Length: 380
Ligand code: HEC
Ligand code: HEC
Ligand code: HEC
Ligand code: HEC
Ligand code: HEC
Image 1 (cartoon, helix red, strand yellow):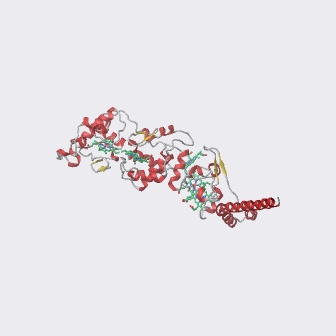
Image 2: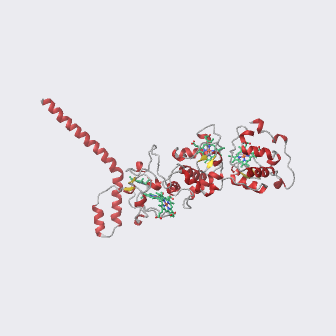
Image 3: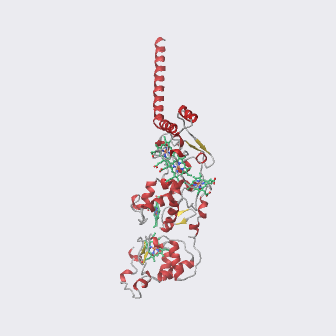
């Protein structure tokens, strides 16, 4: 019985010791990050304050967690960012180092205490260390958005047609059309392309690096990829990525993908009946952005063949059938089948037939060797 008691006492001491030890570790973890920033902030604030009462108050204040509860935009958010970013709305901190710097001026009237921070910046609002709060954990699906990427946050509340104040997003959306991505990729409400994978919710599926790689070097993630390597600048790839990351199939304001239908630029992509003339064929060529892949008279992309003299090589009927269904004539063709009205097809046929190089050669007929015609049909 005596032995039993001493064992019990020993156990109590042991568990107390463990409890204390654990508590110390947890306390130290906290102390390392948010407490330190609060202390530093308070010291700076005291320095900048002249009014004696406020000064006194700040000197006596102990570090605390500053927490915003945001309910009006989608799921309830708990944002503790201002625990460290304690002076975002204090003009006196303009030249202070991060995380104490006054927030830069931004368009619109979004009071921090109403909108919080993660609405625009993502990250993990509950985090109390920089690593957690900034969503640096690879398993956290909403890493901090900075620089031009913040526009992805704007899009959650200001969806298409995108605001002028979000220029990168607008450019990314325009490039998706201009570079003919839409011809291969379906995005609900925007495009109907079938050759590539559907991208309606691609923003929820991949990390940024994967998207950048998929655009920059399609074979990086799939060595058999038929997606062409487009000639894009770093900035263009970044803006396309910003646009793709916004494709989540939902937004905080409207709640489903129907809003994309309002995007005027894309509405203009709908096929309409046109007069059957060479001129309107050229306009259709521009509407579809065929030049993303084809060069005519030195202007355009290099993914498809140069079309400068295609009128000498193919008939109008061949063109129309090829446009309707490229793979019916050229097996394995990666040319997308776009949507055309019947009159647009006829006009495109006329226009392609008119491409004989006459203009650049000033009337002199080019000599087209026989091998240049009818190769792909049988070869590929
Ligand atoms: C534990 C303290 C802490 C918390 C909490 C915190 N931050 Fe930070 N933040 C920092 C520090 C320190 C820096 C400057 C150094 C750095 O970038 O890591 C910083 C920098 C930033 C930057 C600039 C980054 C850049 O690359 O220019 C942004 C934006 C930012 N924080 C947003 C947020 C948001 C949004 C939250 C809440 C989800 C948040 N922070 C929560 C400490 C914190
Ligand atoms: C309405 C959207 C919006 C909200 C809400 C918002 N920010 Fe920002 N924030 C921006 C924009 C836009 C920028 C400028 C990005 C750029 O061009 O570098 C920015 C810049 C910053 C920077 C500076 C980054 C740098 O590179 O210097 C920090 C830090 C920051 N925000 C933190 C916060 C914190 C903390 C909150 C919450 C108190 C917050 N933001 C709320 C939109 C917002
Ligand atoms: C959480 C939702 C939300 C986010 C995120 C958001 N806004 Fe807003 N924004 C609003 C609301 C709501 C208003 C109307 C506020 C008012 O007028 O009181 C507004 C107003 C504006 C306005 C004024 C013109 C207008 O259309 O009413 C501009 C410009 C603007 N926002 C730009 C931005 C930019 C740029 C970003 C990203 C940096 C952004 N917003 C992020 C909700 C949001
Ligand atoms: C000729 C058709 C074609 C064109 C044009 C095209 N893609 Fe693709 N893309 C594909 C195919 C097919 C895949 C599927 C996987 C593969 O083969 O790599 C793909 C894959 C992708 C992926 C990866 C998606 C995922 O879930 O893995 C992204 C992102 C993407 N494309 C973006 C773009 C962008 C942006 C453009 C315009 C610059 C573009 N694509 C133009 C055919 C195309
Ligand atoms: C994503 C890139 C891409 C886009 C956009 C594209 N094409 Fe093509 N096109 C190709 C490829 C690759 C070929 C070669 C395979 C084939 O003939 O189908 C081709 C072949 C052709 C040919 C046959 C050329 C020859 O010499 O055999 C014509 C004509 C043509 N395209 C016209 C068009 C027109 C008109 C448009 C716009 C409505 C267009 N293309 C849009 C990639 C593209």
